[in-house]
Length: 107
View 1 (cartoon, rainbow, N blue to C red):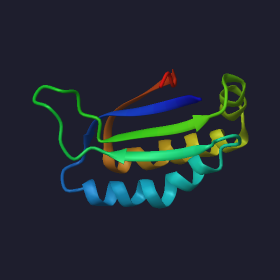
View 2 (view 1 turned 45 degrees about the vertical axis):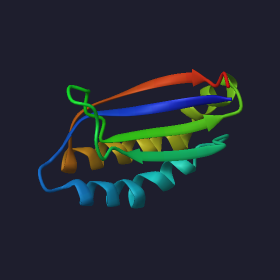
View 3 (view 1 turned 90 degrees about the vertical axis):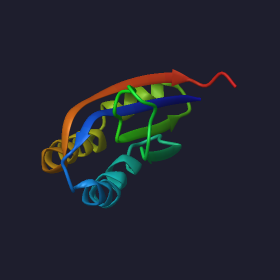
View 4 (view 1 turned 135 degrees about the vertical axis):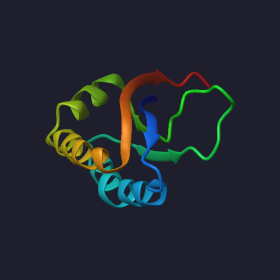
């Protein structure tokens, strides 16, 4: 199994944590779930972290059967729609960057 992570590194605007989380669940999760070949979509919101750790208020995980399925999903119209929705939502709540990591489950 292949998992693609989107790591949202940065900060949520002061007083906007609940609104950010609700907007992600309402506006973005359905877009991510529409990716072709996505076996599972998981969203995790960070509640606490070690002192000095980077701040990741949101981590998105999408599982795929294989790398070819990931490649197809990233070229899909659903991905384009999700990216546009994410780019529209983030400035309202979030300052930072998103980086992606593709992993292979070993155990």
